Image (cartoon, rainbow, N blue to C red; front, top):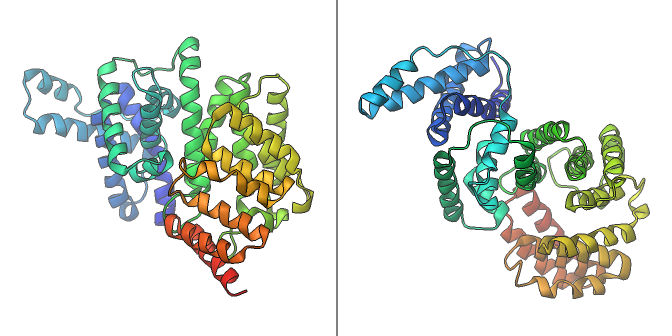
Length: 404
């Protein structure tokens, strides 16, 4: 019998493929998602005892279609719906192996939706994130995000957009949202915003898989290559981010011999080819930062001037306050902690209540020697994060300073 974690990984991998297949065949995005969720629950209930079927994807598709049929019957709809339900009797198994995940990804990012709604819906349908996790990524209340996802589903249903890969022109329009979605899915997997685990490997792995699919689709797009490079260069450090007990290890203290060198080599090659095109975008700049860290044999050899240059350009390009926060760290490493602290004041309003602002301020105060103030901000950061490993790390860091 398959261990439950392995079963959960399999179901997570199959979920977007099954949803894509059901939507492709029958439409009705919202109803299809409900049916697929019921099929996944049925699998989680029966497979541990009965064993995984020979074609698990086909089993899930058939079960989801039967759930759809039951929905139509239970509504006791007019004759038209009864006819449709009859046509759905005994659905043929889908064992073609076709993966509709990429189509589902682009469908969720079609022009009928605002970019924010497209990202939220795709994180839900393709990435498998909960509404709470998506809300955390967008820094909005969970109720607000639930409404946004609900509206997005309705817009998909009424848009009439066919379930198929977009044209070349449509691809260019939707690509920005698609890349943002994959970026957020990867980040949630690499540094989970909630719960006991620092990593959610199934999410970061799925983001990398989808990014590879998009890269194969448009191999000459430098930002697609930049995003894939960023993921690989960042994921290469994952084995060294926790100790044997799962506790967080900051970048400066990691055992670099545990970094995955073949991922670093692949990421650097992708980045070099993308930068050579002359068109520099957000993901390439973030990948440059990641590559600069990865290529330093020791933390003391990190080229912080290059990292600062990348963040300066990235801040000018995006205006993202989180970029400003990272830039403050780079400024502190190049020009001293006082210079970095001076950049945090303008971010107080934009990032009010976010734990990372307190964490960075604590780090820079610690660098400056103000351990008492640093300890207070470490405690404040710990009280605001919903990630238990980060909470533990920040709490311990603050406690050690208080003991000095």
